[in-house]
Length: 178
Image (cartoon, rainbow, N blue to C red; front, side):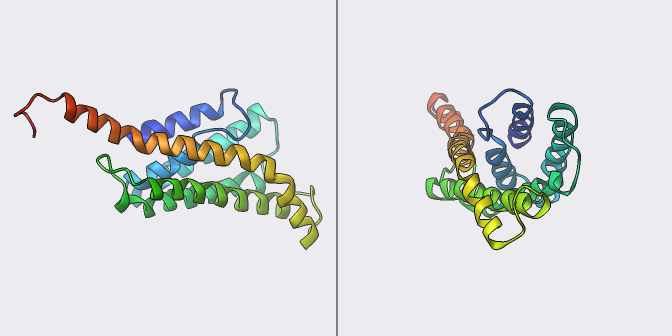
């Protein structure tokens, strides 16, 4: 249930004013992948794709096109990256290297996928190797916010249930352990 709560929070934050690229989207997708079954993977992918459509049409007033849905492929990839974390994390176990690695993989994969999409499906950069290089170099400032938010939110989201469980165990009267 917590995975759905974090997912809804991530979608809601996208519609609120926030520092560019500083959202819990990557962290929520990783957590969802680590906590829910693969059969449920379509839920965050479709929910975030729908929010992309709504944001483009009603907030940013951008036309819909192939580039609108490049992020959809990344949403699926991020949930799959979270799935790779499933055996190393749980509500009772926080594995810092795995969680930090997942956050790094999330940020890096978003950087690569989104910028390949910008280069391939827009006229912003020439469709040459030099244009691709320029696209990636120009995107570096945006990577900072994505990386920072993925790291902070991922660590917090994965630590939250572990911390709650630890507090519950500490405050539980002796002899009532399940």
